[in-house]
Length: 341
Ligand code: KG4
Ligand code: ZN
Image 1 (tube, helix red, strand yellow):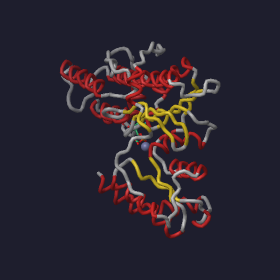
Image 2: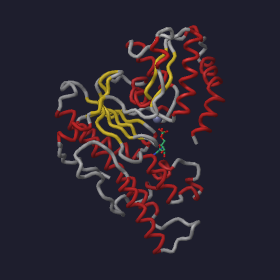
Image 3: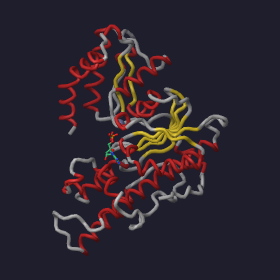
């Protein structure tokens, strides 16, 4: 609910900033710059953060650095690991699904993104439809995590799912068809077994495992094509280690990560992921992105410049140069890495 989110942001932003300064034993005058997210996201929440960030920049005469939320997710790994540009990044969460080539702090190529629900959103809706929350074991977990745990007790090959976007030789994502197939299985099970509203369908674990596999397989296919595309267009240096970074809430899923890791192994990539608390949304990644930009002198705005007043929020905004047409035109047919389940 955007107005509630806005109110909570307003109530807490000052305290959160002051607590962060206190715990790091720093004063405003010791800061190099102020960074705040300006895109993409809920406009009402973005306005609170940007407004407060600009106010601080003005009051303390510090440079202001506007941040793209997804750029911050993509660069977080550099806070904890030595990762040189360029590298591939897969961002999978409840709100987004992206495949990008990161060429520099401010230079991204967009290879693919979600055409409908993000994978986390699909897992959350599926878990709710399966009523997993009524079981004590899953009641406190996110939908995605609940599906992951239930799936460990099921057979991923029990239910058949279609291959999403099989006829589109691009790197975009779609989970609508998979969601629909799952919904049909649930309806059929409910009908056949006369399942009551407060009951779980039989074979619940099998269905969780099969649905999770269908999402993992879809993600793997798009990742593999992205790897083939960057190789075809010679976008990665040939003699250096190739890296795929995966982040976002769904990157916490060990099964999906294990599948992506198999693709990496076959394709000669190393797979890196930030620890779970840095995979999900956090403030440190925005500060880190600010520092990367400040060090590189990119997008750093003086509060006395005319540009400063022009900085504004953007609810929607793709990440980087849009290469999706070129990816489709490359028409890459892949021989899929066979996943060992
Ligand atoms: O990145 P995130 O914390 O927030 C945004 O969406 O921005 O991601 C939250 C999503 C939720 O949809 C949640 O169900 C999913 O990540 N998630 C998982 C797991 N843990 C969290 N999905 C699959 N497996 C998990 N272990
Ligand atoms: Zn996020």
